[in-house]
Image 1 (cartoon, helix red, strand yellow):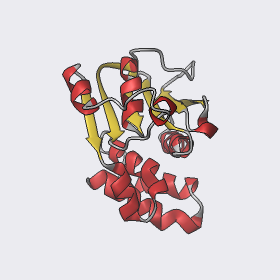
Image 2: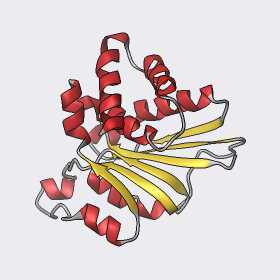
Image 3: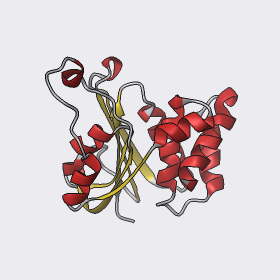
Image 4: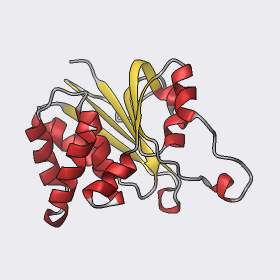
Length: 190
């Protein structure tokens, strides 16, 4: 199989690293060669965070080149817009509609861009935008946005729900397992 590329983007502290590890575990069970690269940026200060997940028969590099991402999974709307040039033609952006103000907006030096979903669509990109934060809160914790997004991503893969649940069981502490399973299901069914 040709190499597939997934970018997971967000703001520090949103759980993108857990999402990439869950995805990596799932792909390993199918026997794919996988490369995961974590680019932290200013993650501990609320800055942009990018994780690359590449899989296929043989993967040589962990980095996704511009215009080569099959999927961009975004935890925050502005981050989805920031990485649109990385999406390949025919790729898909899956994003939470949550808006987290970056420092220039916080300081008043800039305004959060309006109508980002419409602008991304107008640029000819396929975007699946939904309120992942509300679903995470419904599952029991705002911190479960990452698993809600993995649930939504699962709709675009032919892995069984059981395979995804096994990867969740291997990735999260037992005390948070039911919350995360619920978050996954809410994202998948939304």
